[in-house]
Length: 391
Ligand SMILES: Cc1cc2nc3c(=O)[nH]c(=O)nc-3n(C[C@H](O)[C@H](O)[C@H](O)COP(=O)(O)O)c2cc1C
Ligand SMILES: O=C(O)C(=O)c1ccccc1
Image 1: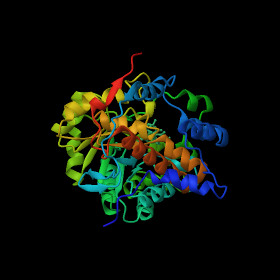
Image 2 (image 1 turned 135 degrees about the vertical axis):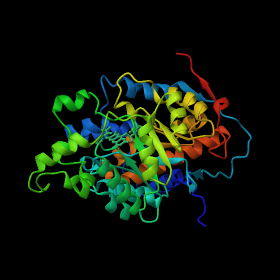
Image 3 (image 1 turned 30 degrees about the vertical axis):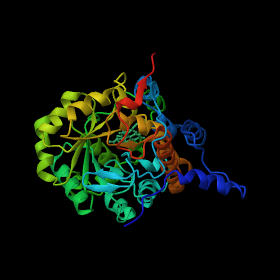
Image 4 (image 1 turned 180 degrees about the horizontal axis):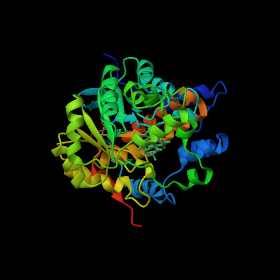
């Protein structure tokens, strides 16, 4: 049995390395990470990663909603020994954190998904592989070694491709399925529109499709002979805005592991997910990238958590930047969170090592925040540990 990591130790590791003159290659402050991405990456990729839908108001609201909650620390509660591990979908995880599915990582760094997957695996953190990855799912699975493998599905319009993706993911050892519901269409994204930048058209994000026998069977000519037609075929079947709740039966039939619906913001949708036999939901507005003007994810979390009760495992993303953000999400009813843009920035700036730095920074800060607030266990914080700041 491995011992539980002492996440806070990263802090002293950094200071001790400083004795020989070394400072971390990347900043600890996530807004500085974003600024560096803005500076160092090309305008197209930087805009795609950082950008959001509409005026960006939902992305800003995600941050504001988390900021508005303030932690009320408690004293003298023996936090000397802390254990951040817990169970999720029947597996023991070292901390209540996983890496969110982010497609097209080749626009961030040439090492792309395998580098992010290796960084996560080295810390025992699950990595959710996007179906729009720039590396085929089988190759990413190899990079994950014996770590937990989770797969995110953009539910293709073509049933055969959907069936094939599920069979391939299962065969490659992915256990949980995350089905993203909030992206049946890509939203209106001014930063990308102004640069006419869509990664797919540059051949990024189609690896799972172009390598898929069912997808290839639908093409008049092989992908290699007519890439443009292949991309057009991909755009037409990437997702399906016609799906409704009863369609979930198809997934239940073709996937025997946990199924988690990503992008749930309304309590009634959480109840519908439970009624459909789903195992969990991710309360998420896709990092403010889909519905411009959508409710802040943290403001939707308590209602969804209440509706879920003990019928669903509730996860959270959209706006998580730091350890104290994770604390707040846990206190508001999430069992664990998905980390999105910060690890993508780490990857963009320093490959696998950058992702490792970001994971360790967030978990060190979570460990310290728990301890300094009087909690030895991530399941301990609750609504009574927060107050809402008046606007
Ligand atoms: C560049 C980028 C690509 C993304 N691609 C996907 C994807 O392929 N599938 C998916 O379910 N979510 C995708 N997301 C959404 C993330 O999974 C997550 O919900 C979001 O990043 C959380 O918001 P935050 O980054 O502001 O914390 C993407 C997000 C970004 C920033
Ligand atoms: O950009 C996104 O937010 C996203 O979810 C996505 C969708 C398709 C391919 C790659 C990323």
